[in-house]
Length: 255
Image 1 (cartoon, rainbow, N blue to C red):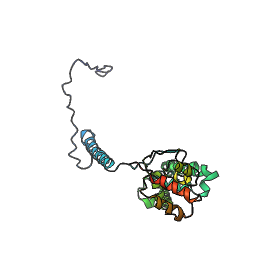
Image 2: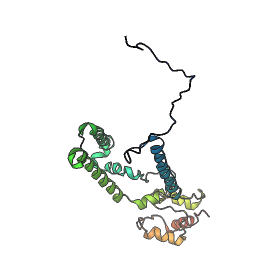
Image 3: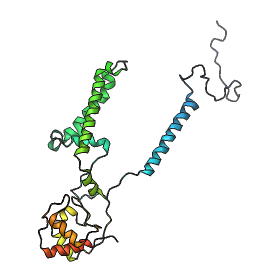
Image 4: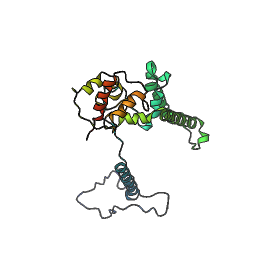
């Protein structure tokens, strides 16, 4: 029988350990540039870098706040919402015939679903330890194809969208109080102007009619001759009604 066989050593929490080492990182000086202690060396560096980026992000946010548009109006069918830039490729995809209308489920669910499924299968389809891209043709080809598709669709979405019209449609316009029983507003309601300029002169497909700074004569001239996206000859009423309406619009100011 060997000495000590079957014996168990039990520690006593009431007795302090005499050989307990202080909470200091190990000495990695023999391996310069290869490894270091996680606490506190590595973690402290990560916190410092994270704090720098966070402070920089907050400064940029305060210096250049996100542009806001007017309050959403569910009754305004002329406004075309646009997603943020990183979703513009999906927005453009839904414009094509094979992914819109009755085939909307293809562009909204099936095509993105297949792309995410392919991304999830990458670890199982590419098991090689090779890191050089030309030695991994399958995943490299898929990534290049995905990048080109996203770049092309985003570019097409930016080029084909009317950003100036969207800016006018989404502009925050100060509300102007006006008398709904006035003769000028009654004429406005019965004209075709309300379809483009809104029931409160806030604009839509057309420009807002508040705070224009134009005189009644200038408004009459535009109603006859047109300006910008407004074609000439849109006024179909009498000259007397147009004069009353122009004077009413001239007085639509927030001052």
